[in-house]
Every structure is written in C-alpha cells, then in structure tokens.
Image (cartoon, rainbow, N blue to C red; front, side, top):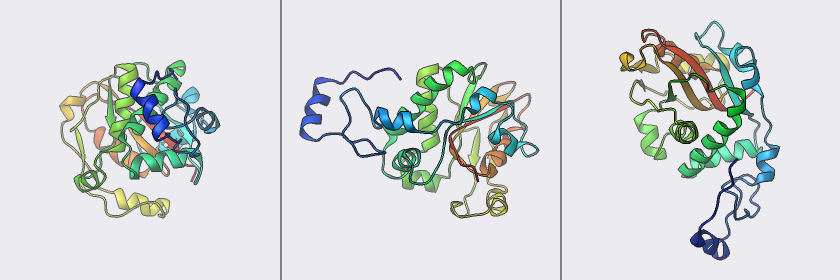
Length: 235
C-alpha cells in the first residue's frame, strides 16, 4: 500500500499520545495507519479474486443469486487480526478505518483485474435504526475506500434494507435465510439498468444476506452483479 506521509501535527500527536495498531495494540510507525505492517502481512488472504467465478464464496451463492464473480480479501477467524480490525471498524466509531481497509482492498485487488469493467459500487444497505445507532454503514466506508483508489462511482438509495429481525452471529444457515427473507426492497431499478455493479459487504458467512440482496437487484433491467466482502468466514 502507498506509504502515508504524516504531517507535522500527526508526528507531534504521536509523541503525546502514540497511536496503536487496532489488531495487536503495538505502537504504529509514523508511516502506518490503523493497522501495523506486520498485522497486515499476517492477515490470511483467500486468493478468491484469482479464481473469481469458482471459489468457496462463489459456490456458496450458486443457485441462490445470479452473479458474475465473487471474492473476499481475507479469511475471517475469531480473535484474529482480521476480526479485531473489523470489530473496531464496526463498533468503536472508526469510520476512517473502514475507508483505509477499502483502499487497502482496492490496491490488493488491482493486479487480479477483479474490478475490471465494474460500472458502480453498491454498499450493502443497513436499516436506518442500525445506521443511527452506529453512525455509519461500514460497507459504505469500504466502498468509499475502493472508490478513492479506482475512481469507480458509488450508487446509493437503489435498494433498501426493510428490516433486520435479529443478529445473525449465532444463527444456523437456515435461520439466517429465514431472518433475511424479504429484508431488501429494490428502490430504483433504472439506476442499475445495463450496469455491472459490485455489491460490497464487510463479512460474508453463509451468503444469506448477500443472496437476498442480489435477488432484489436482479429485478433491474440488464443488470450484472458481482460481489465482494472484506472477509469470508468458512462456516
């Protein structure tokens, strides 16, 4: 990733209140942001983008959503540097961390051509209640980071999350499918007409949420859908 050049004030603040890696809590070097270089290197990659039409994530969506390709950058494991970074982004008011992870993902995906011919990025929507509580949509932040590197525009307000019955963290595959049934509604299919869009989420586990959203997006005329998650959990 391109090295960050800290300002004078950043260096001064580092002396007064040193910044720590969100994954390991070690002090960050001046050129590092949010996650130290060692943790970034140790985060296990999936390499799904190299085989984006046939990988574990894509197969999980076969027969449930009509997609072009699928990829996740990291493998998600509890208490790992990946999970700590994502938890920090989602629950500890760290919007800039989400954008950083999006930029990092875009730069790692660049050599794979996974983002080639994508017309627009579409963050996975969350309910208004959840967005008010959290202050932001983490998938929107990841999309903003990807857009900053690639220049691909972001589409918002074309599909909405109509409900979220309960947390899915401890649910089975079947329970997750039931939980997201009817959870999305297409708002503006014309905005998607004949576009190849990339649906973006933070973590994919069973594919229930991703497939439910794709099923709504597929109603748009001529739309093509690919999907990306920052991390993938092998359920």
